Image (cartoon, rainbow, N blue to C red; front, side, top):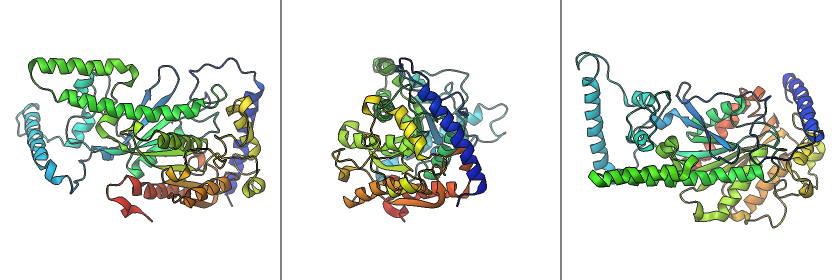
Length: 460
């Protein structure tokens, strides 16, 4: 059973949440604005930090000028390490690496000569230190290409050397559709942990909340971020190809074209962290509670889009205690209806706030994954890891969905944690518990099967 402290905190949590939900239902809603909100005033927010002070650098980006949709990027320090050698590519890249090494040695020599005092006095700056010190006001080619010359920025900006590419994980926070945010203290801590353990770039999505923006706003925001990743990859490739042009008039023309690429897309100009270190062909979706419903929707849309999303490819998804429900109650929905933190009555209030009144149904496609003709065929879904808690009334439906995936030969294991409650690995009070850390490690082990170049070496 959960500890006494967890039980007491659950009572307090449910009291506050129920009060907020009832207030939002009783308060007459004004005409909703499509811009929306992505956080609440009562939410504790963690500031972004674009340096690697704790092993992960973060930055916030508002990616849609017409809505409040935003993202927070988590870049692990491991991105600064040289890429691991690939035996298949060694013969092709040997000459390129030798040239790069010569250029690096020449630049280090110039760096020592330009230091204060004689060239043989002082310490040599390592490549990793140069990465950390470089800023938007620096001398890297990526920086020059984007014309970002602000002396105020002191965070990490990539330089044009041999850089390591990391998989990209889209993360959707929980909060019952009406609360939570991608930059909350709890979500920031969780994403940092996942970024380090999985060795991935985490893109936490700040989708629009209900009731200001009801269904399908949050789902559309999730899909919009996936499309934005594809646009970023294509922009980066265009910018890179333009930067390869050399000499006189051609160089001026390339600079003009590169500037056109940035200006034509406005807010979608090349994001340097993703351009330098992101590998969209290894994309994972991770959803927490109601965020798992968004992740599953985005995965389905990615399957339907197919190669239209190139170069983005969703290789796996992780559903952490998904916010599924249905008109026919399962055993756990009856037995655990009054469970910890999120009981069934409060979740029904959340669904009423999220779904439009004319569409409200517990068998809505956003709520019940087991309804027929939901599309696309389950056999086309990506590998899906489902995390459930013993004392969570939503667990049985999540397990049933996983079983349906396995019936059509989709890799869909279930990790069930004993004596655990809903959001046991992501709630602020429980984040530092051994069980929360173990869950994150288990997710990392499974995810690495699909993002590692060494294949199933990491399987159970």
